Image (cartoon, one colour):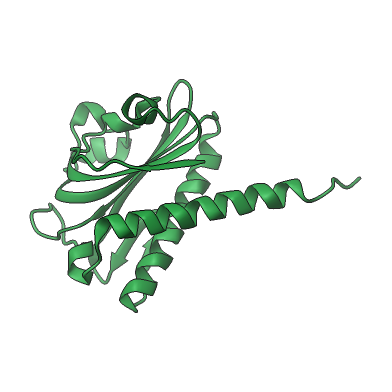
Length: 184
């Protein structure tokens, strides 16, 4: 798995979870985790969560740290499990940095009633994708939120640590899969 931090600010609008976005943006051709900082304004045409569409949810934030993960495989269930692994990895990194326990509900993280994150996993014609966004600032959102600024966490440093730890987990899973023999 290849990681890349894009230094240019990008507005996440949902189009980033189309197939091969990471390749088009960074040249990465393998399974990848790409991060960038920018606002979040998901248009209805790019919204893939049917529950959010049905309820008319507004998903936006003036500034978030975004993770885009792409797996060149068609298994959405496996990718949702990877999404949960990413969520737990981010939770562990945050808790270590802030010295406080957070709550996880599926692929979302909370500090009390304040939501820290958004996330979705989906499939494309050639891959499966994960978007995970964590607020940097906590004002200007449609729900009560907290962000990295509230905890005095520098977003790029946090992104690099999360990518490193996530790739270590994926590498360890691959190693565990390869070190066992089948049984009859």
